[in-house]
Length: 210
Image 1: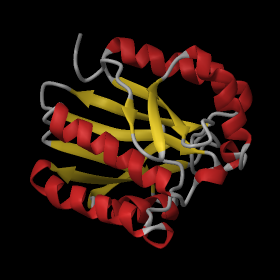
Image 2: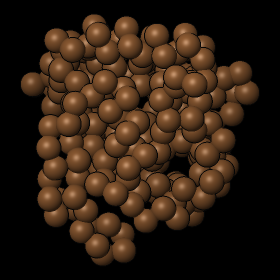
Image 3: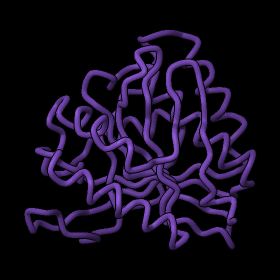
């Protein structure tokens, strides 16, 4: 199996990333109701009614080789807190995008996001030998843009009129990346943030969906 799409569990102190499955449906529905994130026009978060189709979509993309999806479980509560993925996987060139991410409102601005990003980046750079990891978000999703910058990613540019939102308006997509040479410093930066406590943690807002 392609290691870029092989299911794997990533575990930390604050969160566990579990390979997405249909069995997570009810927990994900409960999580998405926490904050009603699907009502934010500049994101693409599944509503409770859309959750089953979204799970099936992500698993189909995994089968086709372009996505590795996870369910995020918060510790120590054990409750499902959201979803995240490697998407737009380019195994030949050892590149992935971390995206299609959303978290329940109650776990936003906690250590969970910082640790999830640290686990995802560690797996990408140290297990998959990625040369770059990309992040994308909408121009008007300012909270997400700030959060990505706080990870240590650098802005590559803006793709103007890149996509259509559900309401029909055009989205400018802001592209960020971390390259392999930057990873040791970014890893130390994120580990330091986790050790410092709540005031230094990376806030989070839903990122874009494919």
